[in-house]
Amino acid sequence: MGELVSLEAAQALRDKLRSDGKTLVFTNGHFDLLHAGHLDYLEQARALGDALFVGVNGDASTRRLKGQGRPLVPEGQRARLLAALEPVSAVTIFDADTADELITALQPEIYIKGGDYADKPLPERGTVEAYGGRVELIEYAAGHSTTQLINKIRKLS
Image 1 (cartoon, rainbow, N blue to C red):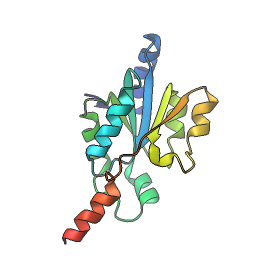
Image 2: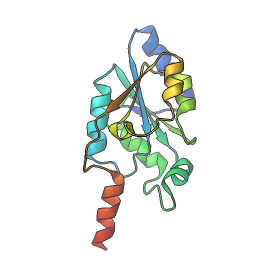
Image 3: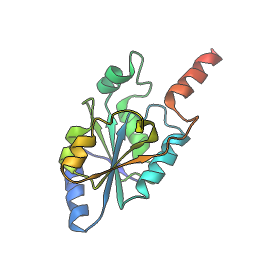
Image 4: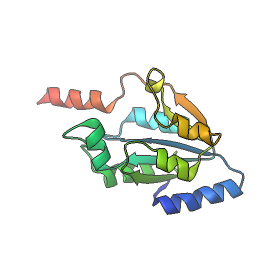
């Protein structure tokens, strides 16, 4: 189980991992309406290293990127839920539209995104590759998306 931390605390945890010769895996996203697809993704990400840090888009960033009415779950609750999951070591909330700042600060050995990025540009790729990090895409679990879940709920009313 992880913890919700500031960027400064995440950097201190990262420094400890580095001094212990451990591998940091990092991912980021909105994680609005947590579901089994998210858990599968996080378990696969964590299996690639010694610790998994997750950057959670803050409410303002989620609104800008996902549109009016999102997020459904406030950032603090989303971060707390993620931190409670076994594969997650630490969670940090960020308000930018990309995770470039977090990636630059933490320089994880491995940066993870979902396989849905196989056919579209990954904004953080250049940042990761600039310091010698590796980008890995985890296969997208079809049928597991927050948007699909929201649409299903809407059909109920």
